[in-house]
Length: 494
Image (cartoon, rainbow, N blue to C red; front, side):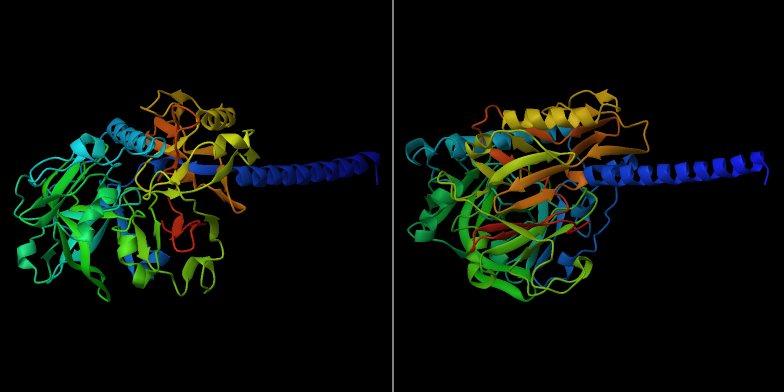
């Protein structure tokens, strides 16, 4: 073999080894990137204008209800909707969200004043509850339940930050806003009963609504006003509630609204999932054991589910049949002495791009923390938010920035990209529970040219840390209230 041929062969061999090594390094770097970052198709950030009903494990459970966003096309699917779905402006959504957060803070940071004097709802069902009786907001997601005999289907906002369930009722003594479903007529139901002013159930409205109940011709009158100035006032009654064809509840206590105004979309009212004795969780406890779960869909154009009761089996994408999905992790629920409504949690650390942020543990322990289905954007202590935002920015320097969007101050312009890589964001909870947020739970999209980090800072570190619904997207969130624990299972719905 001549010298040239030998050198050429060795040169080719060395080049092949170098290429193989380069390929291995590229593969390793890609694996490391995948473990710390999400790769997102920019086109997926804008939801479809038509409903894409999800096929998920929740839809097969006997006591499950379909969940849709109240402003999305899935809320109108199959209902009596007139015209198209009108989505409010993003700054309006975030402004309403801030109102809800301020009311939550007023309830948890400062004890609610004694419900006396000017806080009283007056005798007439046409009167408004006092401003000091405000609760939180009116929620974002809807489910359809049945009420009355014969059953009327009603689409209600569900909310873990509210206790009482109510719907608009004829004859609408003062005012009823426009809703998709026919307005419920208690006179057409053979199972409706008014609740007396002197009953213990009427007295319990004080804690469930923040207002002392009123009385009209011996009938109990409720009044509830939300932080966004929405309200409902009407008669307090009992009726047959139908969750599914096989799950019905006689004498379910609810508000039959005669004067209702505000930001309820075109829903028929509200389903209260809080911890008060008048909530649906407590009223159905004998059957469901204070156990419910939900999965919020990834966009306004898809659906999730709300399920009542402990499951006997889980099937499908978790890969096996078992009492619980293998990925379900439980953290303890905490009791907040200032409120009997909210579900308290304990967050211990935050991670960005796989790295734990350097935050004093006292920052988390010094602020009350809750999980809330009705708050959109997670609110963090300023110390935590600043650390998260700065770490996120360091990972996103290659992307052009965009103007702030209301309370969201870290935004990017992805309009010239097909895909983008964003760092993963993770939370550590009490009980040795760690979860990585789904990619849709990290960014809030106004348009492809304005995609923002979906977190905001509270005013001070002592304000309430609120784990909002954007961060809950696509997770099955399990509330085992009887055992005082909260579960997270990823990829629960589309």
